[in-house]
Length: 463
Image (cartoon, rainbow, N blue to C red; front, side, top):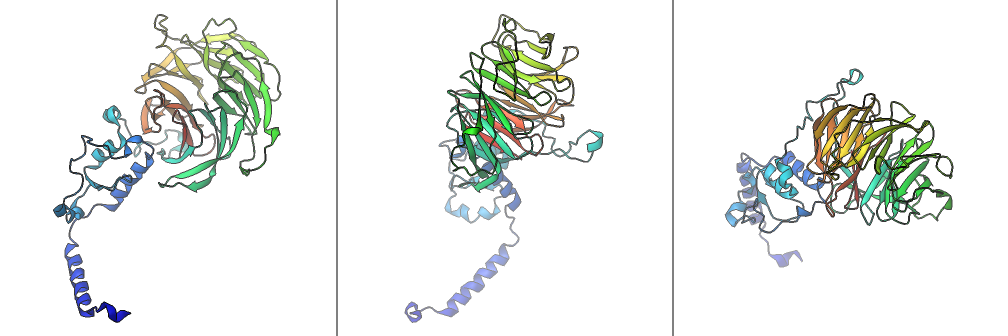
């Protein structure tokens, strides 16, 4: 019933004209830079999982009157650095850095400067002169495990990741099967398969060079072999018993580390029982050979294959030693130089050793916040650096051998230029749980992905 409203069309037209004039008059006012606001929001979304995102009551870096008073609202257009954190309806007037810092709760990390040479740094390798260094950004958060994730391994070719968790399971993720997440721009990935056979926390996982098998070690002392399922499997298919190959028996305590040798189809393991063992990866059979049976070097914590010599392996031990062994003769060839102070046993703990993919160099991650580089030929220390604010737990080198990635209990992942040994990118990735944060990091062997595993039961993938 239009007549019931009794509206004077002339008044409405007048009001429209008046509004248009006002808009014209405001054209000169400087408004917040839209792209700047979008960047800030993107940054805040990237750290969506951080607990401090809820507006903290009485946070010192926030203005006490965080709601704008009436007369301020009209001036909101003129405020240059107005940011809207996604989790709160309040508007905060603060500079970009200050806003981000209070949102991220960085604390002492904020004071630490990192040379972010994202703009200027290029590959120094002749055939790659024009390839600019990549800046990594968070893409997927993998949430399905019920307890901390200890290790992860990428498929050699497919965009597929396998995670190993303290919840006794391993999960397989297809990074191309995504669904939009509920509250942010990032995408969620559901696991497509869960591997169940371990009777306790799963501590390490590796994949074979063709991606058809994977092997996991657990605190139950077992190494389980799996036939990797098709990444396009329906998650609701009925159970296929042929996935489980059967356990490799021999270790009497937790299996801390595994390494796969593509050249010989061999599997290396190191265990809390003090031994390193070499297995034939193609069959379920006892170990081919056992190393460090007398535990003279201590208990092995990490093992890797020496890339420059496929018959050699490198292992780090609880007493602070790192040694290279010949797998064929079972001889210890070399112990890398270390200034082990036997009195203070905790500080010399080595959490991870890896071999550089192209150079005869071993890299170790230490409980005392250091990363050290050794020459495999002479055993001499090449370089040592304090790399994090807390214990360094994990290392990975990209397939081209140009960049090193390190993870730490200080919640950060850092990317290092291996030539200059400088940090070129740092990102906060996981929350702490029981003083632990990042357990493992990995580069995809052939695609542009990196991943991290956290004690917070999440795995993060960056692109």
